[in-house]
Image 1 (cartoon, one colour):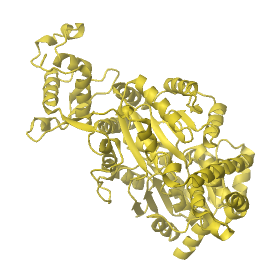
Image 2 (cartoon, helix red, strand yellow; image 1 turned 90 degrees about the vertical axis):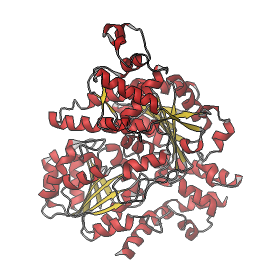
Image 3 (tube, one colour; image 1 turned 180 degrees about the vertical axis):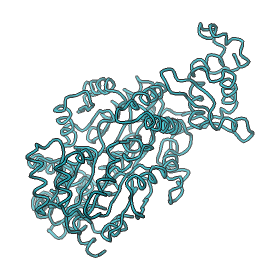
Image 4 (cartoon, helix red, strand yellow; image 1 turned 90 degrees about the horizontal axis):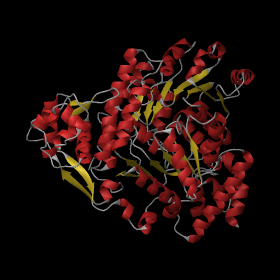
Length: 619
């Protein structure tokens, strides 16, 4: 079985060996077992179900949340000579009928569908007749109310599987699942003693940076970064449509080849802009979080967050769209206090979802508040950023403990001071206790600083015991409040006017062991010389190709790839990944056999592209 799997991997996908965890999942599926794979973005989750789909008789059903994901993955499979198709609302009824008829005739090995397809009686009839070899659930965290992207339609997957004449193996995959979410996935999909593989959440090729900046400085930093890395592809995430529009306009005005994506654009505009980004015609995409899930673009060299996301799950998923080819990439997060307020506002808005009952909405809202506190803690921590991410996801998972220092994040490499703010934190706790959770953090800060503003006088707070006991700026007091919220010493209520109250760990703040530290950067990152910024391992071209000749060949092969991709109407990475092009530049293959030995080159791609690429390399 292992030999057949290895041969399928080599001949169809061009890889000589499986990555960690992949073969165990493949063997589980081929052996008829349910499996769950929790693997970081870029670790090769799709291979874990695509290889078994090719080995097993029948057609594998792949449940995927987004149309763009299906389209990209089917394109990539067809490019490798693998018969695959998708069923979604973009197809006409007659096209859908044709796809199902061809699947029944055995023409496809993989069929991608959205969970909404379960509403279609025609699909139910098809599923009752089709020889279904496997049901794969991609982005499986969508089934859990504790996940960051809960979709009620995913709750119907279990009943769909149960309705099939013969139950096939069920495979669930996700990149972002805490232990609680992982257990939820198994329960809600009614999986039977699944083989669980957690390969870890670390992405060693990604460098993480977090910087607290004003809105004006955010804009300047993003524009200068994009111009410094003009040859690289990147994504810039914003919280709102308005910010996307403003930042996109500013970048284009500065000379950056950028496009934009948000739900306020027409469907035609979104499709055209996404195509321009995927095809490298506009290498920079400015977008809300409506963009990206399932975008299988492997050569994204950086992801910048213009605002703090609402959870570490969302952040790691979005940041993880950088460096999917395993080459070095950068993940930069810029934030300020207003981002936290925006995230709290969205929590109240997003749970007004007609698909959820009142009880479900409250469960979701409660989970979102906890995730926001963890995200805020990440922005403010003085510890290694990579270790903070790994600790969040790996607690209670069977995996190695994260290192305390990675040497490849801004907290480990920049000149960061951990300032002890324990006494100030205790003063804040006393004030919140005295005010009995009736006021927001602005009023708490005003009381502590002895403000004489109208609101403080109106509420009679000048008589409070904690009035005027701190000599700190309002911004510092508010930041420490958020640190205490992140640590669950304080909590912020829901509603239009969030109030600050004591949290579940409030009593711990009064103990001798309690300590709180705030991050302070001695040497602002924006003051670094331009040479230092460009010398980092951001540009994977410079990092992996040592000679000028290799770098020149890489650009020539990239140009050739773009010409071929445009001619075939597919994204350039579908032809070959950046990593495969670099492999060619280093190996300099002269014969078809030598070309086939390059990682990422399979038999189909050798036959399709080998002659023209070998000619360019030999030239």
